[in-house]
Length: 115
Image (cartoon, rainbow, N blue to C red):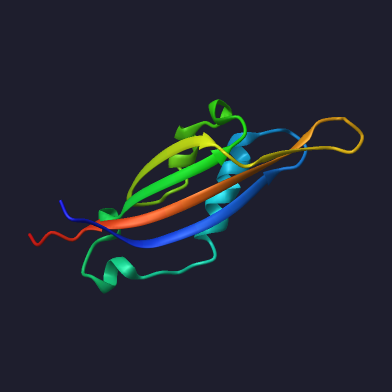
């Protein structure tokens, strides 16, 4: 397979009150995706289901991110999500908790090997 990256998008998401790392990650992915309307699949004669989607999530508590919920965001393609240490937990000034910030990098590739 000649996997060739075509698109690389970045996003940031937050959970202001609930310390919900999955929701913050979901918002980060959507931030990366929803600002674009890219027709790269059609431009190269591929179906959208041929998209190889690699997502890297950075969160302060990687184990608190539900990857299955994040995969469900993608309406097509072949998403693969990895979660590592990153993002920020910002303490609230009154000491009542933290605001969670999660980062996402979304890479879209295609198998460019001729059939």
